[in-house]
Image 1 (cartoon, rainbow, N blue to C red):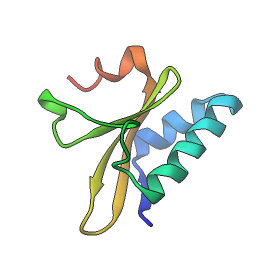
Image 2 (cartoon, one colour; image 1 turned 180 degrees about the vertical axis):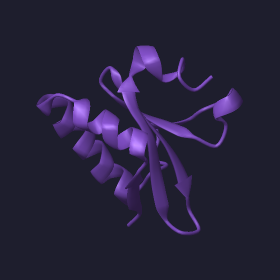
Image 3 (tube, rainbow, N blue to C red; image 1 turned 90 degrees about the vertical axis):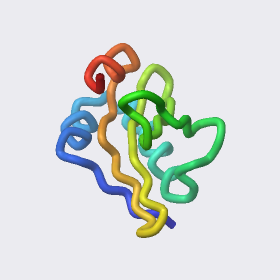
Length: 89
């Protein structure tokens, strides 16, 4: 099982979510603990975001990085799909 770490930004994002989305994000985090590279949910990002992954939760995206050696998943951002790529350019 992987350890999940939320960055400060991800913690702020998480606190702003509605109850419905929070429940779905929690399910996502449970899946990430078991297998953070599970296809098709885990998509490897490209360009400036190479080395990062995103997991789709409805219209929301969980952006994260995986350290397989230490078995740690670092959640960088939980944001609406319209904002995720704008803030990471």
